[in-house]
Length: 504
Image 1 (cartoon, helix red, strand yellow):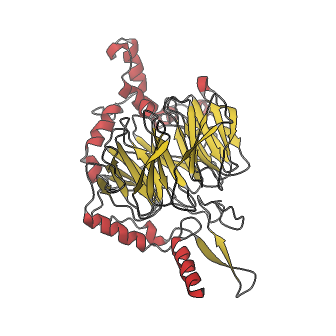
Image 2: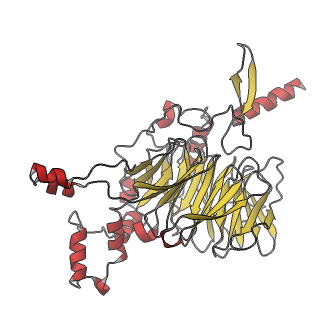
Image 3: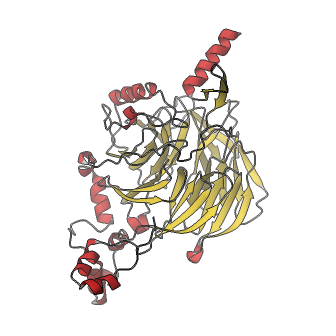
């Protein structure tokens, strides 16, 4: 009936699944689907290019009051070798002390190594691989020996990263893909990879063996139009966790070869899932209801889908979650154009839940194809927001853009880095909230970013169809360098200063 069709149309418009655009005539209207992680590739819809040149506002004075009072500040400063060192840190002085045998165990401490490498963040584009369609995912393996990229052309590409190389050695055609591969993950042993899409199945494939065999893990959903937006694997490789568009968390047991749990977790799409640490007992989920939920795997039950706690403070849907790996801290990226840092020992109360729910229901724009409204850029904190820190300076439009902690080994996790809808890789200082690095080269949004676990290298995957590898190259000058040059005669200084290079 016409009344039923009108109700269906109104529902789809509210959900942002469809939009009305003006067609050929003044009174002609066309119905098209919006693009994001959708399964419709309508060429007339927004392609994520930089046509409108949205410039995300950078927070010039981040509020660090709560973070300064938390344990994470001391932990990061200690791990990064910055606790109590003041402003007298000097790499030449450390090298001299090591040569004189004054370093403990005749070598630098992990903190001193992290402190030194913080001066050599990636700043130089060293490699590019181009695809014919949008690049959606790109991650390093746990060891850093492999890199995996997933593209809208349904191909999953594997790169050999050993001995300083970045060489493609295998291309695998994904199976049962609707519109694009949406997420990928390595198994803990590094021998297999998994991928998800607009499909009832999560697929697993052998990296070094027969790549023509794709094992399908049937999630058996009740929804007809089903997608898994985020996947991760437990530390023992046994359980696969997925977040789907039906608002549910799915747990698949690889040993039993069956879905063991389906938890009704969020009121809308579940866009992100993550395990809290290597024990895989605690897990996180984030959805379009703007809430982060903390779950205990040991007490999860389908008949009583009760989380351990809820973290509220975002004003729009969550696009990604990354755990610090210590079962305490995590970060979340959101369509409200912010990244937030959380401590799971500080759960949110009812006031925060209601404030976040009101903020979401008042959103009347769609991040997939509309520009950010001015009210969304206001620097305001919701009542009851329990986040420790908020980071601003990147754009979240078009797709589920990702954020991550920097590696433990090289940076002591003192940075947060993320993609950006303006085609950048943005790096924030975890403790100050300030933007310390912006890598610019892409012509469309950067959906995924991955930092090598043991080297100063970042790979960005963009909707312009390019995969870019960034490393460090001496092309910047610090005050000490410039001060030495200023004291030299003009002719000598001119010879000393090399020509500038456009590395960013």
